Length: 423
Image (tube, rainbow, N blue to C red; front, top):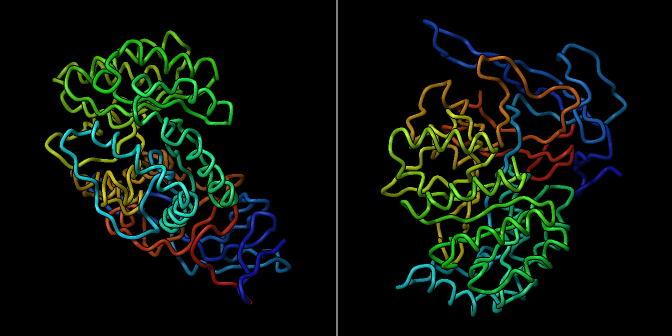
């Protein structure tokens, strides 16, 4: 049915409607062989059953028997994907609390969580839903959420997370990682992880197999075996730096190949990649790319700079995530994945039109309106109507200036923001 809030009609995937006066990118302008600007055109889009059925020039007649909404010349971008977030444990939506102070790093945090997580359970679903609303307001309609599976709360965080996501199923799509934050071996949760897999979790998680679990080989093998048994993906938190972390990545690559997990493995953080020497960086990047192993990064600011440009150059799939958003690990996350692409552009000096426009791919999971040579590849008729409208002239401006997200569509449904109905 047509959704109505007050007297304002809202687009819904179950009804056809027209989205008028949409600005779409359609090519680059060149000067002296270099991209100087991005060209755009105005188009009208017909949305049917959550997909873009027609893309029409504005002077072409369209059905006047269906609802129409005016985009007022705003730019249409692919909706965003947050591929590393913790929706199950956040202070967001509750009283302000800064990060927890530790003397013994991650082990103090593990001890703290064993007390904190049970205290947060009664409001975990409510706070998770408020966090979903926040990231929706910034244009994210796809998440991969890690969810604590530990002896302190068992599967209760997972239950709350699944309920929260179910309440927003028409607005956001998701994956869930069964994450042993207190150590897969250290906290003896293999059985709980397997129970989580039976409840429909999509990925097996892991954590620092040497530093936390104390046995890299057993930890990685246990994680991989669960993934193989349940035909699931893998997403491991790997904070370990230097040779310890590199050894784990290389061994995981071997196990990925042996287990037939090509394209199903992600290494989150992977800080050790910042310590690679020239030559070995290319070798490992090529190895990761050949196995379809992705790297998920929050674009950290610190002494070491992650080699994201080199990884991309060698066709490693680089994903972005907000990670912590106002929780006991960090108070700084704001929930905007486009802001992470913006941060990457600053960090790596992507300040011209072309590089800024390509940086958008980090926020969208690889989708850009134009391909590398400036041919329009999105949107096409038949694509899902999952997109963001922003008051910007092009992708490059959106990445650089972070405009407000005026309206967010997920499979045709208005997930956040407003659209102006045409009388």
